[in-house]
Length: 378
Image (cartoon, rainbow, N blue to C red; front, side, top):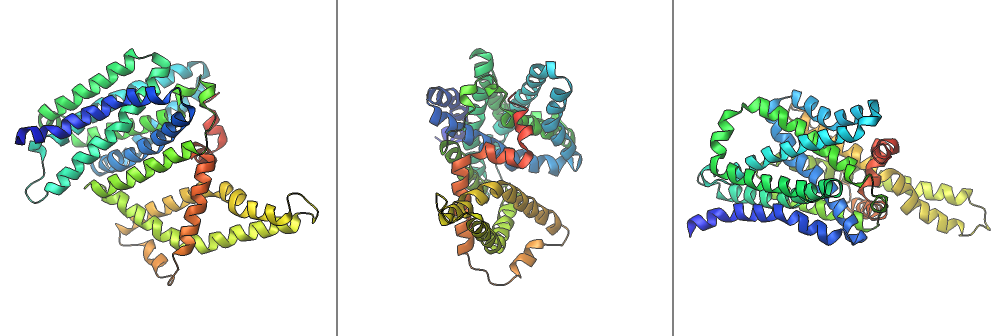
């Protein structure tokens, strides 16, 4: 009975990987569901890379891991811009590297599920949480493999990839400790960072949708709902994963910063609405106050939400880095005085509405530039 219980996390992980083709098959003829899953994959895979891969890679590989992460994320785009006729080959090379990385990641997942790899006595809850995190994150990983590869290569190659990932998970479960000792920690961390960047490039670029124009059009609010579902799942995983302390710290710092800055942002949106009202002729239709309301709660919010959140996220991450050296910016934010929470709640609702209207990919393109996004489409 005890051996069967030890096998349950492994079996659940394999089932999660195999669910990818089923989920994709259900979504493909349904544009709304397809948009939901597209939004879910975008946020969940990006978040899981940041949650699992990046902290470990930087911990073992040091600052050089950032160079490998950037190379994996930006390198294929540089190749594509320099060799336009070879864009498909560049995508294929990126996909191959990402698949290889996923296979190695499957080995690591299997090793983490090994009972012998369990944490010492008194940390059973941490090991259980890690097992749950591995099982849950395998769902979007399996979905991503089919999502990216099936429209371009048909069913055979993605099916073989998922089968190899399942085999890698089992091999990691059986021989993970021996395999881990063969590779040096620093070299493996650098490779892991390179692969993480490649996975982000594949997911953000969506080469699998380049030739399917009917799937490019956004389906609000379904893409935004997928983004939100993935975000909630990542928050739950961050609370369960015993290795997610860094991400939890960044999240806490970001919440403090949002609470501190929300009143000023709401005032700015109100001023934008007032300026719109003053510039609108009295006999205009819709009325000046209707336009002012639309500008304050929709126009100005949509134009700024993604950039502001990206800036706040960077500041929160900077706070975590500086706090490790004895300097904590969030202490200043807390010291700004007692700030009511309701402006932050109102701001969160406004940004939620913007996410549902626009979707995560339009948010992303507004941060990195529309040209960067369109480069993957044309």
